[in-house]
Image 1 (spheres, rainbow, N blue to C red):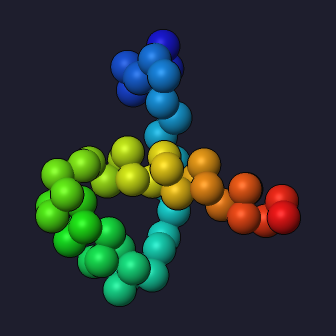
Image 2 (image 1 turned 45 degrees about the horizontal axis):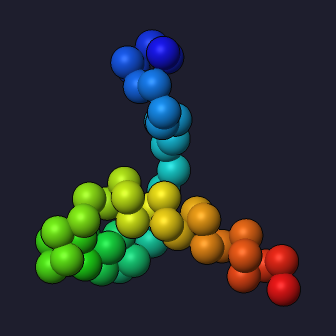
Length: 52
């Protein structure tokens, strides 16, 4: 367990494009999936795209 009490997650700090973040927040609300889970999926998909 890390200092934040997270067992299976790592806290990251990064800046993202404001428009993209707004779209991400809207999507999260519409489909009722937390932003953290959507980011997990994005991080999973990006390496696949660049591996091709």
